[in-house]
Length: 511
Image 1 (cartoon, rainbow, N blue to C red):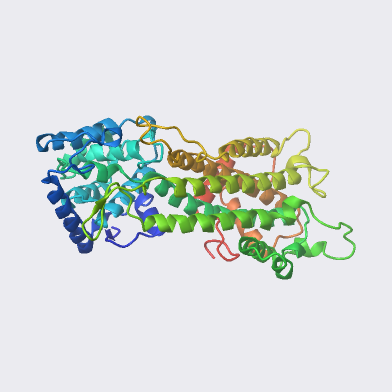
Image 2 (tube, rainbow, N blue to C red):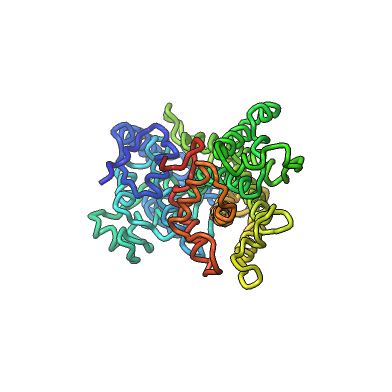
């Protein structure tokens, strides 16, 4: 069994998030976290006995912050906060998204700035380690004051209420799942309700997972571009390092180097490298691939920087400062995360768009330099990959719509107390859909390029592209009469999802 991830007062890494959210790694709280939480809780306990009102401790919430709550009603206040804010609607979000937001909320609690009791944070860690996943509806977060509705659905589970999915996949009441795992529901004390729900953890978790996926897909996109260059009898000279140095863009140089490495030693490229080739230059979709892929790489690097800053953040309102002050703040606003989520969606759409253009060139006999129309086996009887490109085109069109920013919108809420919101959760949801679309677009280009390379026989692709073609051939047969294409597309999508086609330095993942 995987050893638990110990959560302390130091920031988590993006790899930690992926391991817990996606791979199911259990967690435990470190001694430094327990000490930090106990210290901040002592501050809250002192304020709870103060005659002066303190937001979230002895007052209502949001637009009701001026309402003082007597001590006898504060337990009810915390319970009512969670119940009322667990107001989401729609289909449940994915298990990995819920686990990600649970982990990130726990990481903030562990830093000792929220006033949570160690036992309450320990219950959240126990739920996460037991593989219990609260049912979190897709709609409900405006991305300000945190991902309130999604986090409230999680907090409701800690009260023994709401619906969950157990580790074995069965749905049922939270109380039953907690009991089966040997966990006892909590009665929330002052400030704890706010501490559990005032975070940007949902959108941040989705950002980290998207960054992980996009990194692999950009590697695969470089590979697909190299295979398409070979298939279309393109040149590798445009990817040379001295040409790239004329435009010192980091991502572009990296993609160009990777495409060049993938084309190194290619007999197909060598076959038309002499003066007898009268073509002056290749189409933009071939020679400009490093510019488009590289821009996405640079965007991803910037987004990763923002994600790392957020992973080091303690998001709550109010917060307990090291000197004992309890201060209100606006750090829960999701703008930093929302903006890069939208930025990534733009680059995802652009990478998919150029991939679809390369695919279309391979299928068009007027531009493919000798390949059969649509890469068909018996032209006229067979349609080849004609409709696979339709699927690409439909997805690319959808990705362009998903590239429209969510973060430029704002809908006031809470009687104008929360009068500007980030829509970061929605930016994250559409980016997840966009990443899935990009994976499918690249899969179809790889499928087409592998078939085109086979059709170039007896010429052989280079060592790297040949290895990728051979990996694809483990799940999809070579050229031949028309077959049911949908399962073949899904098989290559699965290869991409598993990382089987993911270059880090010009060789396949298994090399």
